[in-house]
Figure 1 (cartoon, rainbow, N blue to C red):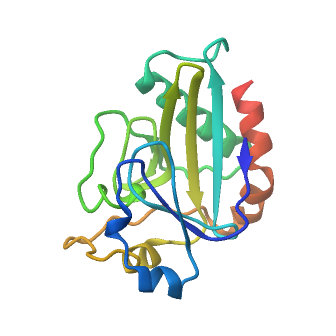
Figure 2: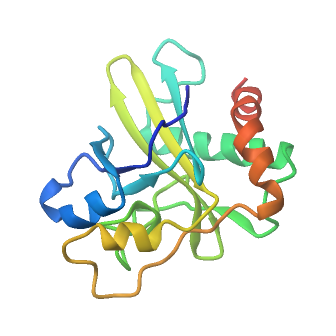
Figure 3: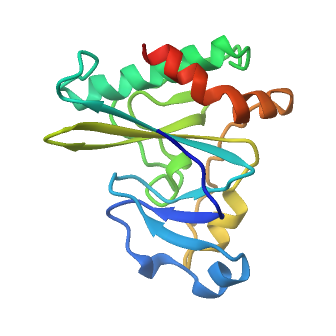
Length: 192
């Protein structure tokens, strides 16, 4: 499912409280605040500056993996395959394997941490993933940024982290239009 937002929104992770937000800043930036059912930190969804894609895999689908960690790794591989097919995969991209790391503000901001299966460039996250599982299957949400949302997100918090926050990796400007218009189709092909 390719979700196209109609407005910029700050999306809280399932375990985050709205109490962490600075309402004045939220109003000043005209942000909608919504909550996703999957865990992780807050993200900024912007119809112009990011792409958000939900991949749903039903339990009866042969691509479904009962192990959540394996499902995350597989979806991350699909993203990498799609970016390579578009010619928009950074040469130094790599897939993180291991336990969730929430150093440097990652408990508050999704892209500042890292989880198994996510795609990184250097130490910065390029493709963030989160997963929600039900008895019907898995939904893995992924996001990639064209512009750095860090300052807007930090300004939306009542108490920003005291540490320097890891910023996301960004898609190269030459790839912005390609990824914005063709990523969904490339992911569909990669998933087949």
